[in-house]
Amino acid sequence: MKQEQLYEGKAKKVFATDDPTLCIVSYKDDATAFNGLKKGTIAGKGVVNNRMTNMMMQLLEKKGIPTHFVKELSDRETLVKKVSIVPLEVIVRNVSAGSFSKRYGVEEGIPFDEPTVEFSYKNDELGDPLLNTYHALALHLATKEEISLIEDYAFRVNDVLKEYFLTLGVKLIDFKLEFGKLPDGTIVLADEISPDTCRFWDAKTGEKLDKDRFRRDMGGVEDAYREIFKRVSAN
Ligand code: ADP
Ligand code: UDP
Image (cartoon, rainbow, N blue to C red):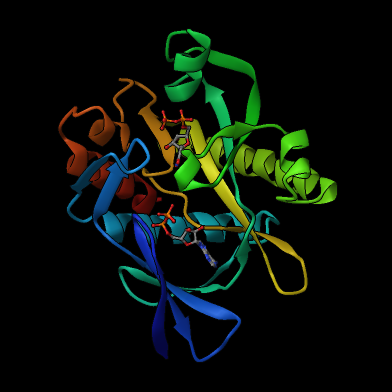
């Protein structure tokens, strides 16, 4: 069933299948940060990210958000609908952190009255620059209708995940989503939802349970991935 490799990214490989509408995503333990400048390995990350992403995609499908998920094939491999990725990184934030804090000169950990959404142009060569809707339209990255639907889905994903993680004693600080288009033009949620792409803070202690431990050389990286996975698996 698995055919030739179509793409190798920083954290995943994508393979063709017998069916041209489907592909297989294979999750690696490789980790990068700062647009690939920092490289490393997080043992067991591929398994955590694959299985956690699939749980989140199935939860979101149940809540009416269409996703690329088809079937988990193994610990590291999942069958997904092949999409043409909309080249926008869609970032939703509930609490100040990371590049938001840096850019606007505010400390991390300030909860927002309302969640925010922002877009980056998914382009490694340019370092994924921040852009607004007008820029995305000027660059023909998506249509007005698609951007508005993507924004709507992104906030709905946030509502579902924020509530879900709170039941696990975890605050969802921020996260990045990618959307794709099916051959008929339908927009679906694609890529992954994992500690690589979300910030998770323990609700009681504030301990970081995500890739910031790797980005910031905090230690306990593998343990953090194991801990968040234990919590989602127990639920
Ligand atoms: P990067 O390309 O940023 O290094 P990854 O290592 O995660 O990222 O590579 C996975 C690639 O697969 C990403 O470019 C992502 O946009 C793409 N992708 C995710 N889901 C799908 C899908 N359903 N169909 C086609 N491509 C996908
Ligand atoms: N994020 C991501 N991929 C990126 C950039 C950001 O998954 O290329 C996620 C990141 O894990 C965090 C959120 O998006 O949960 C917001 O990231 P931010 O803009 O603060 O950037 P960073 O501090 O990671 O540079």
